[in-house]
Length: 145
Figure 1: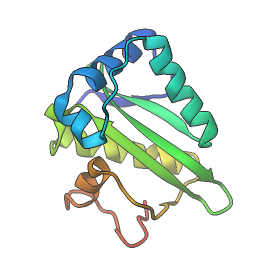
Figure 2: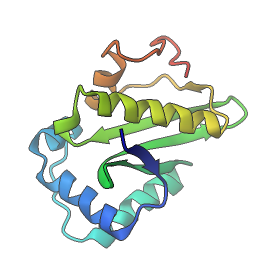
Figure 3: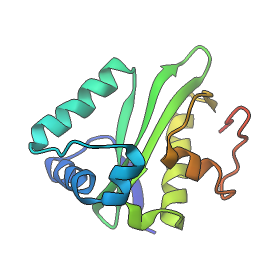
Figure 4: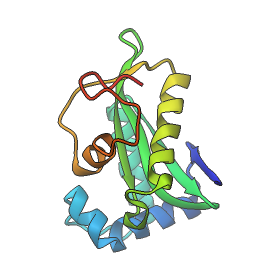
């Protein structure tokens, strides 16, 4: 499987991600989005500002050389070795090995930066779907990675 995470999101990948967010009706519903993005630079800047204000990193999910979604680590606390995570992927990949593998890559990325657990918080529908899938070795009570 040709799947990886890329922190250096290219202009082309940014355009593809913006198109997914604008065109994938199921994903838009799941994320509660009402606004369409018209400018890829604005779309990119929103992500960069979010990452900066949330002490986080955003990674494009790349499958067969095409951006298909985004994962993020935020509110990174190196002292407590914990962070929040975010995740969205094109709806055609929901409940597939690609989705679960992308989340596994996020867990590896978290370990690489010294994160040992994800913080408890209110999860959105995408995150709940992954956590409740039973496909991951994750303890819901502490979300140890």
